[in-house]
Image 1 (tube, rainbow, N blue to C red):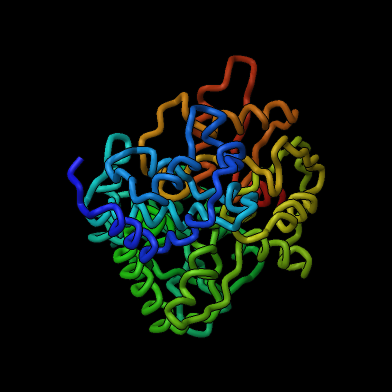
Image 2: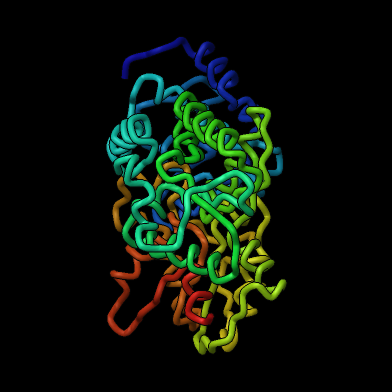
Length: 383
């Protein structure tokens, strides 16, 4: 590997880029014990932190790209080390030199797509609102009740477009005056920021903030925990504050207010998966469960590793765009937990989770089956 800076300089660069907390690590190894990677292969976050401490990080190694930012280790660290920030600091070094090794290589195409079209899936910006064709969905206008920020996956991915359509149907049924930005909407930027591309994150954030201000947006509804996290916790860095509400929160409010009436029976056993960026990162555990319990006939079952201990799907921190060999997929393990809970349906509220779980469900052994649904799709069935 070509040396890009002396050891001490590397240490200072890592500190400067947000990884300063690595110096508190005393190598207890608890991060390795709780990391989901060690359920599928040998991986040591402790080693990565130790290498950073001495400026020995090799930016062309895939290991610095394994972290999914699930936050399990951060919550359990007895010394307050923020492994996510330390890992992102290392990725910033790699991103500056366009070093995307092995299975990380697809990030280059994602960067190009985000730069040119404002989305991570390679779709045409002008087709961002195609999912809404034929539906009663209007462009956002100032004074509307809320803006529905659809997000990249719900705008372009064929499976996730069904979730966007279900959401629009529920909002219309409840009489909510809402609109979308269409081609004026850009990726929230949360995941590309976790790959170390701070410049691109800022560009996307500023595009969205400008669109919000120009359109007079006050309240934003989102279906992705990653959008929720970014708008709620990261966009205030730009000295702006918009009211941000997650879909399960909002739908629960509509049901309690009588604007949505759940009248049909859903006589199925359902288990709920806590997305990392909804649960550990933002503390929303009860709202989705309360909403599911409002569904007539639905029997809610808990999986092993639920709530604060929820097992990551493997898609965070840009991993959704990287190549993950089948034997390394956390989502396969999570599907197994769902099956063992006795549930027929795995419900969640995250496009990354649904994408990964749907892929994993195709490989379930004969005799086992698991339907993967967004909560909005379940609610639409019982109206």
